[in-house]
Length: 349
Length: 95
Image (cartoon, rainbow over all chains, first blue to last red; front, top):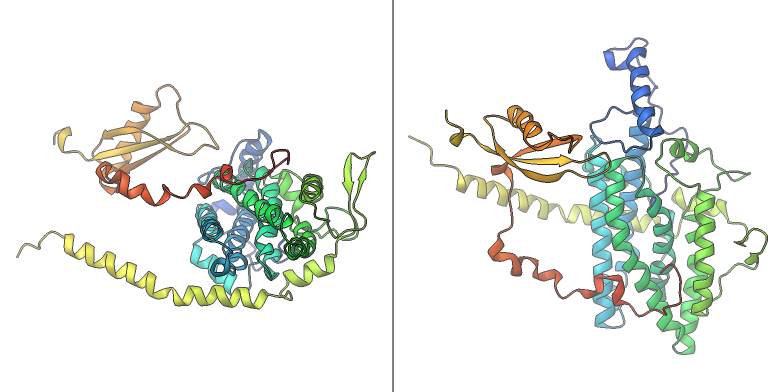
């Protein structure tokens, strides 16, 4: 979600209800062995897998789920920031914010297209989003209460997303990796504009400084949760990290990426003159990294499963946009039909 | 049938795994299968590719060179889509 995949373990069971004997050659053990040899060879040599390559069903379903969640996160992620478009403090900020929200829509489109190379249809994926059968990043279930939140999202949420997405440019599935190259190029403006918003506020009036600090306080922990549950220890979910790393979909563990993000962000916060809401945050000379306090994983799972401040509103708005946009899709089809009829050669009587 | 009346096909070649298909050129062929085989012989004689797409030229809709300026104009005044537009202190790393 935003480049991570923490679907609940056990929710997909391709073997369930399968007949005892294979119905076609593609399900026989010989085929499975040959496929495994071919596919494992590609992965071993760190080659990219392309759409027409034979691939294990589990690899395909994992990728579809991850790309769909990633795409859903992009388009749901339009909402918290779109909330501030009409109230952006200047024309400059408004134009920037519109460009950014537009980019998020574009990122969603790149990712739905990449998922479609695996034989799914985006309407199917949207249905799953709308009915709650597929998730999006839990971060977007938090509200944007002040203008400073637009800054904090760019700086922290997009900063974390970049950390997740850069390694995905080397993901084993070619279309996903290529989509990520485009996305990452565009993200760097997102992060910088967010930092700039906070940089200006942090140099403003006392109220503006307080607003910037308040936004950082509210977004810091959810941003750390974006990397997903720990890979080891009591809070580790029996998720997909190990398998996804073996398949070259993921290149780093959740905890490694989270640590990198903390190490990158703490000096930036210092530069801004903003504190981060963690009393345990301290430089660890021995490790050469910043130590940070425990993350509330109960909150993470609660919000992911639907009980966050904005879950209901996000899905309601998405479904409403989809339904109220139906006339646009219908009008486009009617126009295409009319054009086709007009350009059809005259029937010979 | 002379080759003059065969349809034109655009050829896209993927140089290696992980790269996208890139337009290499075009050729004439009577059908898509023959277009694919001809494309192999015309455009990948020196192992320039690992995958080929052929697309009937008439199925491609292209923007017009005459309209280039007006067509791409909407992006011309949106310099804020580039990261260099933003004023941030120079000594902040990883921005």
